[in-house]
Structure formats: C-alpha cells, structure tokens
Length: 125
Image (cartoon, rainbow, N blue to C red; front, side):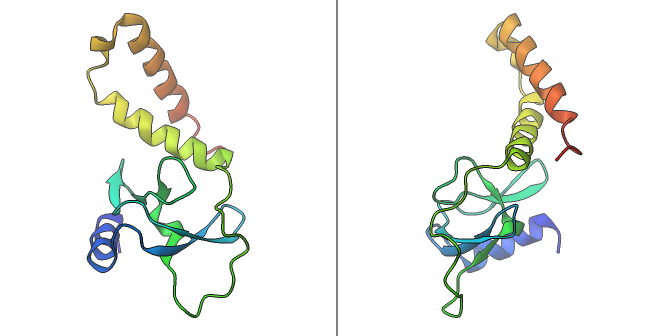
C-alpha cells in the first residue's frame, strides 16, 4: 500500500481524536490521540498527535484496541533529532515551491540556505 492509499484508508476508518498507539524511534509504544485527519506532506503520510509538535509519520501510528497492553508511557516522547530532521526536510521542500522573494531578499536567502542544508540531512541519523 502506498502512502496516498494509506491516508485514504486511515481517514475512511478513523477520525480526529482517535486513540492511537505511537511507536517512537526507540520502538517504545505510547498511548495518545490523533488531533487531525491524515494527509500527505512531501510524499509522506502524516498525522498530528497529542503531545508532539508538528506531525508524525502515519507508519508510526496505529489505532489503539482494547487488547493493547499498558503502554510504556501515556505521554509521547520528546522529538528525536531524526524526527526533527524529517520534519525540517518536509517543511523546507514545501518552502522551496513558494515565492520566497516576497519575504525580502535576506529572509529568502536564509530560507533557501536552510532548505539546502536540510536536503543534505536525509541520510544522517
């Protein structure tokens, strides 16, 4: 299943506020809730969850069931450097498509430099 199909299937089955289990970068599970429907960002299926800024990869989230054991923590973990780099890359890719010059030359230059830097972070942990 590709990410677009995953978004469509998720949104057909679940709504904003769905109890979910989020798996962090260390494979620990955390009980939380969605705070959005799923959508695509730079080719990635994402959803917002309570307790984390920005969005989280939909592949790291599953709907909670009554069979779920007590999670490690009821509070999602802080954002890891790898997750922050993924979010930054997606935001910078989005920015690249925008008319940055309207922000002024200095801001546009800074944002382009940030986007170029983030593009090079893709294979780093």
